[in-house]
Amino acid sequence: MNPIEKLLHDLQHPGMPVEVAVLLGCLLAAFGLCHVVGRRHRPDSVWFGRGIVDGLAFPLVALGLTYAAVKIVAVWQPVVLLKLAVPVLVSLAGIRFIARVLAIAFPHSAIARLVERVFSWLAWIAAVLWVLGVLPQVRSELDDIHLAIGKSHISVLTLIDGTLSAGVMLLAALWISAVLEKRVLNQAVHDLSLRKVASNVVRSALLLVGALFVLSAVGVDLTALSVLGGALGVGLGFGLQKLASNYVSGFVILFERSLRIGDVVKVDSFEGTVVDIKTRYTLIRSVNGRESIVPNEKLITERIENLTLIDPKMLLTTDVGVGYDSDVGQVMRLLVEAAASADGVMQDPAPVARLVKFGADALEFHVQYWIRNPTAQANVRSQVNLALLASLRAAGIDIPYPQRVVQVRGPVALQPPEPSPR
Image (tube, rainbow, N blue to C red; front, side, top):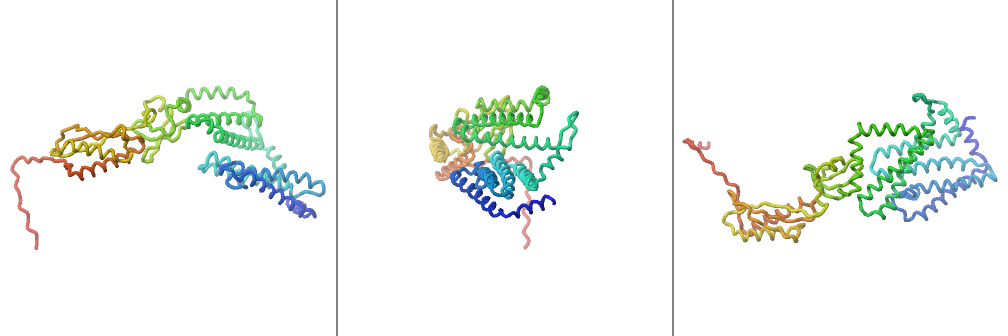
């Protein structure tokens, strides 16, 4: 009798209706308990997710109730269906855990969605093999297949177990770091940059501890890592010097707070707002939507203009030319009033207008005004220009066109125009 026939035969025992009722009761009890506890849960909760059955709590509670039911029902009758539900709930709990943690750590990553699907298929395949009773045999076959790596021989089962353990440790580290960042760091650290560096340090430390646990679990001698650490240090000193410098510079920026998220900076000729500070690079976004990825080493070793480090105010200038027959006092008064009437222009210090040049075609004025938000300079400048133009036109003040004098040297024969055909 093959495993499938044996399973179908076992499911036909007389106590099956009792098992069905007990299993349904366990699922309903788990749903009711999770509903009561998680009614006010957050949408990004790992335990409850977007819905009650979308998180980790429901399969874990159902698993605990079902396992207890197996022990109780086995006293009076054979148990088949409840035992089959145990591996299914274990797989569901693993899938829900990975899905929720990846959704929190990488909310917009396509690779995270691919990893979730691959693990889901592997988990359900393992559950089917467990239900059919052939999982121990499959593990034994995988353990007999060895791969030669240098002088060592490692079985395929060891590689699979190590990969799964590393994945679980990685997800656990991401989960713990996300919880610490949202529940502890957000309340204890109010500065966004310090919160970022604390989050990076906690996540790196957890990943390192998790990696050491995984290596120890799969049988790797941790004393051998000292040689690897020495080789890695030599590599960082020579081949990875720039990369290591960028990482160190990222932590220096976050600790010194010379640049903070939200600052308006100018790097070379690129000006924009700091939207994120990574450990290797800093992301700067300009007002037109363009983004620049700047290595952190450049922000440490070169001159960077931080427009919001001390004072967020910014001085703008608009040049205006009027005719020579205009009243200078009236022009200056109109220019100041028009600039002050635009939205975003500061009243203290107030706008000023100055006659700076006797141009070839017009009297040239500089209108200077301060704004508080440098990221909105394009909008404020446009509003000021429109106000200046409307004010001068309303007062009848001429804004002359550029004039050019053309001199013709030597005789020029003027040809009469040809008559148009009728």
